[in-house]
Image (cartoon, rainbow, N blue to C red):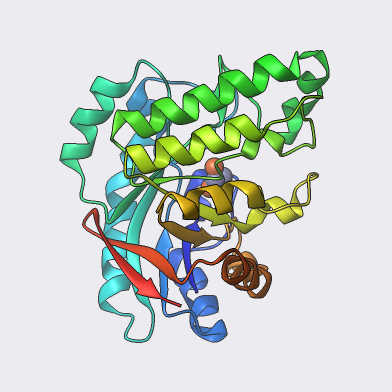
Length: 265
Ligand code: ZN
Ligand code: FE
Ligand code: FE
Ligand code: ZN
């Protein structure tokens, strides 16, 4: 297994240095890891209510630290990734920024809906006031637009809207099917993100039905623990591997300088 979704203390809501994450990966025998800390929201001219990303001035240091780690890690391949918020209207800006930095891969994630940080436990009460049908519609439309933007190699925690266990009364199958279709059409990868098991919903992201639909459409997948501390590296990877095998996946997508290869597992 590979762990392509690791944060670091730079984002202000995680702990541990890249070297500490790498040490755990080595210990548990992962052949490849990738850091995907939160891209500075300030560079997208967005100011959230609480700071949840590194500051613009820290990005160069982050990249340098990981590049140094790559060179010093003979056992575990280390990749330089980043997790960038997809915020509608920032596409032009993002396009310029992506030409300035060299990443192995870019994870596109949605954490904000009209200024609401809906993945933050602090604001989870707001779900109670929402029309959940409309909320899911809005969320998944953003996911599809993120795919269509073409700026992301991987979509992060693709059904994270379920994080606190709020779901519409009606079926959500059409969202999952359409998401698989759009991933395929735009040749975007997605991830099995194991962090959801530690969230109130207590499930991986995404729903198994989306894994099945995506595989059927030929979509490629990575795996990530979304670790916010070194102790979370590779969390639940035994279950993740079992699930992926059951569904029928036999390869994982890996990235070097934004070019994808498949490795069997
Ligand atoms: Zn985070
Ligand atoms: Fe995220
Ligand atoms: Fe993350
Ligand atoms: Zn994340």
